[in-house]
Image (tube, rainbow, N blue to C red; front, top):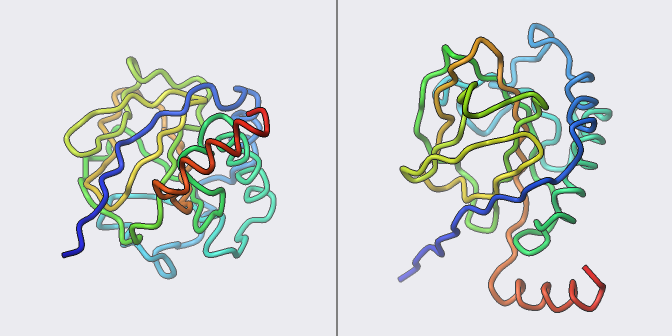
Length: 196
């Protein structure tokens, strides 16, 4: 019998500066210029009520400048604590937009158990208490604040939470390779030996 290992979500805090998020946001093209990603995506974006700009797909850089900034952000997430949970091998990276018309849409992703997702908000001025737009995972609500990134298993039920304000919430998500239990202990020892 094959049982799934449960991965409890982990929040990595104070990953980067607000300036880094502002630079990322400044370079994102207007939503009207985004391609119709649904034609080539593995997910049905209409089903999950999502407007998305894919940056990295299976090692291919769809937008080299934004992909480079995303890789820089992933390096910071990894160094801030992600190294205890995943290998920074990016299988997918995309930017999504949600607003107060976006409904909660609980769903699961098609990735295998060797993958984890990392999610964070790019709006440096976002306040989850005033703006809403948190994250629902397995019936638990998580506050998403700028500079914090949530690591979770996207094969479990998840969704955006309701947005209250008139702002658009811009988020980035990465799909990365999960560290397994035997790898985690080895990685912690290596991190300790390297002074991390």
